[in-house]
Length: 461
Ligand SMILES: C[S@@+](CC[C@H](N)C(=O)[O-])C[C@H]1O[C@@H](n2cnc3c(N)ncnc32)[C@H](O)[C@@H]1O
Ligand code: SF4
Image 1 (spheres, rainbow, N blue to C red):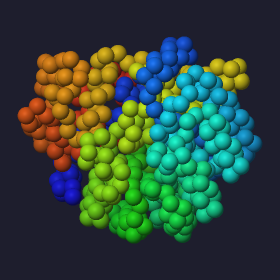
Image 2: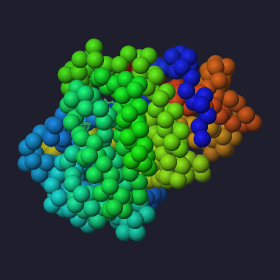
Image 3: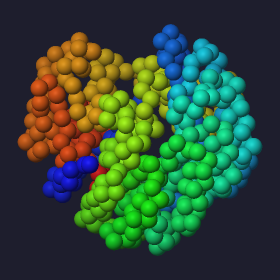
Image 4: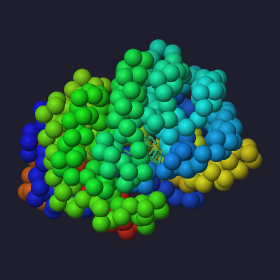
């Protein structure tokens, strides 16, 4: 049970600056255009030596209608032929990637993200699975973490069953808000029955974990209105919930210009909604995992957090540490050995590279020793809400307090405010610091002083 002091209005007000979500460290704005295919291939060679298991991220960018708030990498189209062409290139990318990897490396994690992966036809989905199975060692014992993001409006009961039969065992779906007025204002009309049917179908099909996405901060939302959505969601008993903060950034996301800022809830109302979210979900037995995520206490994420082996990567929190991530599809990000690499964002450059027989790497970064150390510190803090300084010191051959002298001084101020506490060789994040965990992590982020990062990141409120 999360103590009620998880939510502290004054501290949130004081510390709510924009900050990264730390799905990587260094964060994506720091990937460099001079990191190219050769750098990537050298990383693949080192990764083959190590022989770690693999995590595959497959990006399907298409959606057939636009949700005005959306900040995802997506392409809105009703033209199915675009997906067919995209999939041809994706098959080529699978071949080119697999050619470089030594055979037999087990795929422990697989994530189809978007856009809307269920935009593609059943036949195309089946062909994509065949292609992946042909070129990668996919598990057939159902013990991998094989997840797909679905839009319940784009897939029926039989479709959900087929996804399970292909090998997916986790599913997340966009809901955002059940209130019809909110749905109209953001152009996402999704009757409650559609969501309920999708959840029932996923349960019957035997998905291990079902997750719903909600957003607070959308037009016309209020504390009472969102409470009703929360009540209805709790009744449906999803295993996990992501409750995202809507950050209105029309300068970055064009479709957000369709949202009238006058209809958005004020920061005070958003804060009150967030408080209600935490109260209602914890009362209903959900555990606050961190960032935007909640899970039932018997869900794998909550179990992994209790064991201390929760992990975080581009797909958010996960139970599979130690995989190298192969990114497939436009904009996809990989994490191979000590590098990050991102594919071309625009579909044409991505497809052209593949047509020329080249991997479509657009930018990336090789981590230095300091980056690797700080990544470990940030990952452990964001997953465990505590850090064993001695263990880090031993693993990286440093005296933690000496190496992080300035950071420890900065943490003193957070300790004085009750966000963290120092205990025999440990930094512990207190309940009031949990919602502000990114702020604690930011203390260890060497890149933040540069304003390349400003204006790109979202806030708690
Ligand atoms: C790729 S979508 C999920 C799959 C599918 N496209 C759908 O919408 O049902 C990922 C999720 O990101 C969240 N999201 C998208 N844009 C957002 C924004 N601007 N602020 C907060 N959350 C956002 C939504 O909750 C959405 O469900
Ligand atoms: S929220 Fe999902 S369905 Fe809506 S535009 Fe974004 S990716 Fe597409």
